[in-house]
Image (tube, rainbow, N blue to C red):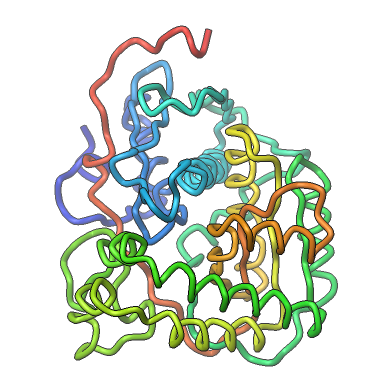
Amino acid sequence: MNSAVDTGEPYTLPSTEQFPADGSVEEQYLFLLRYAVLAPSTFNTQPWRFRVSVEGVELYGDYTRRLPVADPAGRELLMSIGAAVMNLRVAADFFDFGCEVVYNHSGSSEEPLAFVNLLPGDASVHAGVRLNTLFPQLTRRHTNRKPFLVSRVPASVIRQVQDLAASGETVVSASTDGKLNDAVAGLVAQADRLLLADPAYRRDVAEWLRPNDTQQPDGMRGEVVGLDAHAAPFAPWATRVFDLGKRRAAQDKNLCLDAPGLITIAGEDTVPHWLAAGEFLERMLLLLTAEGIQHSYFNMPVQVPALRLALRKLLGLHVWPQLLLRIGYSLAEPVPTPRRPINEFLLPHQEHGEYFR
């Protein structure tokens, strides 16, 4: 195997010039998967597994990395799989491959969730638009939890997001209305207090908090959530032991109130819609990144059934909220989250089963 793509060393991203154009199909797939794993995931759990062969790539959910309290149904895990698929589509298009994706909608933890076949020399078209122009944003897209500037998000960008949603099954509510955003921010604060009062939820969060100087290739370093080098090592312990809901509620409410815009991604509560929402999410984030717009997630109200219903009614949605984000501009550069070595995502080859026939 090409050492640039199959290595046990800490994750490094090869240059585009290192693409193994004359290599085997498996080597080419592995190269493209390095971009797929740059997709976002809750607490940077990176819940993906891949089986690579000459036939294509099978994508599995790694349910050992599911959050049992925050994400008991695997909803956010499945959206992470969809986001990884979108990254793979974008990378494939950039390197002049067609990209055929067949989803397995069972949601089974034992079966692959998607099968991807790449077609050399047949650049992909997704919803009638080439995706290769988004490729530079794959390495630039990062969650930014710092305060945003008061600068308004252009109406043209909001229209782009809405037009993107109109081309698929995902529903989007994009708001720059201060009064509405104030009400949404109130739900975020309420959710923080409820969730962080639960010791089991706090254990979910604490498991993925890391010191700023950690060598672990997953989870969230303290600096990502605003902690300095002195406080970050104590964050997992403090999160487990203390109910910091009031403090977090005040912080998150202010971040939402000050954000130029809030975006809610919505859809039905089914495996196909969760996977589609993940694909839409990542394509939208790459589009926003290209416009210089930052983002971060405030999914807490979606994780509390009563508040999820309240958010649905507040926004006048006919389907369920799946993700809540704030968007805006920031002078602070977002802190990239680490990635695991590519070999840790790989499963041994076997013939794919009836779920794709």
